[in-house]
Amino acid sequence: MPISREVLLLVDVINPLDFPEAEQMLASALAAARAIARLKQELARRGVAAIYANDNYGTWHSEFSDILQACRSLPGARGEIAELLAPAPEDLVILKPQHSAFHSTPLEHLLDRMRAERLCIVGFATDMCVMLSATDARMCGYQVQVPRNCTAAESAWRKREALRQLGRAFKCDTRASVAARKP
Image 1: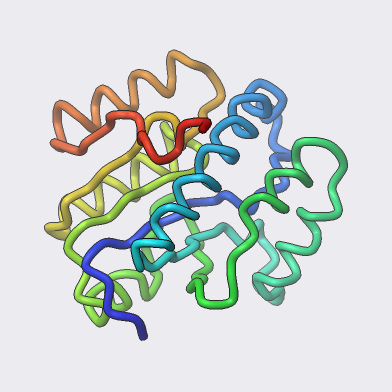
Image 2 (image 1 turned 135 degrees about the horizontal axis):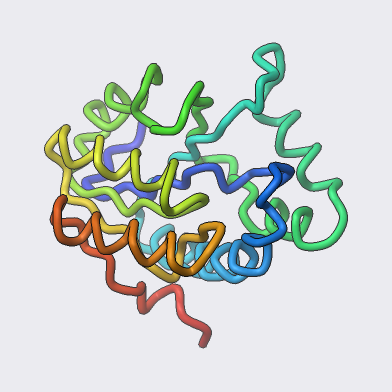
């Protein structure tokens, strides 16, 4: 188990995006995925550990590697996102049953063992899984950053409102990540 005071938490980034409103989110998800990949690379250079918290999409008998492979084989942006954000061998992966990465998962135990103090939370969807993971992280006492350029939602309004709520009510840092910007 790596010791990492800061942890990058990637929420639902390996995702088939096959829900009814997914088409509305696809372009922003691809842009966010590119920013997340740049941020992850920069944080890895600094020794920051990464944990993927992913839905299992109702297939409890599957392994994360099955989900990754299925998403990688999808055409277009869906497959590109999975390819861009595939975990490195040293990254940790947990499957979550619902929206928050903390709910009914070993995440809090992992973070405790890693001696984490700060979480940088990125992923899909800003107004659901990312927001609920960030609020749970704050309730657990972590400092939380949710870089606005590293998340996506079904609409710009939903993303903006979720980030506003995270910043105002939960005191999360929602500024764009400089490391995630295009060179």
